[in-house]
Length: 260
Image: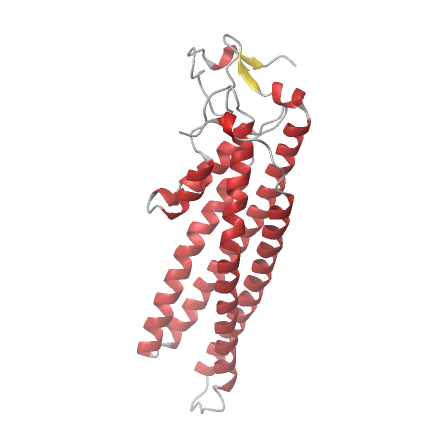
């Protein structure tokens, strides 16, 4: 069984910078896809308005669809390249968070499971965000608060995935039926997919920067660690969302900052 005493703080600067660069590139690809989707909507409306469209009239539409396909390939390639350093960063930040609890209460989600939860159906809809929220809890300095970025990151990712699947289903159906209206509506869903994906990537960048900075402060300042919330009755380290101490059961009003 994993124990907080088994982990020691290690800076994650290299991994963090690599992941942020890759996420930045993903943002750029999503922006290109959004522009192409807007242009596709305009071209579809223009093409549908023609009385007797020819192959020449459809040339711009075909070119735009080709560029969209290349942008999609670039997005998938970036995703595959990002997966390994991203998961390594999640593991490192979780291990750092655990190291701050040596001798204290054992956290709920271990560094190994922080990665494993991404691959477990159903659980992977909620657990990654819970893991990152735990990491912020465990890396909390005296005046620190858990930000909204973990929840924004994961909600954006999940709903972007749903929108992406809906877009694929709609374009396949439109391709079989030749329904230009359905193609047009599919591009609206594509824009939603791009917006949610961009929000998720931006939130992830802010989340990793913030968490790494907090952990660096915790590692450099023993006083910052000792100022983390603790139970007034027994001194047990507490997380922000604890209503009662897990050891002695003291209620929230008895909580106080641990003495410096």
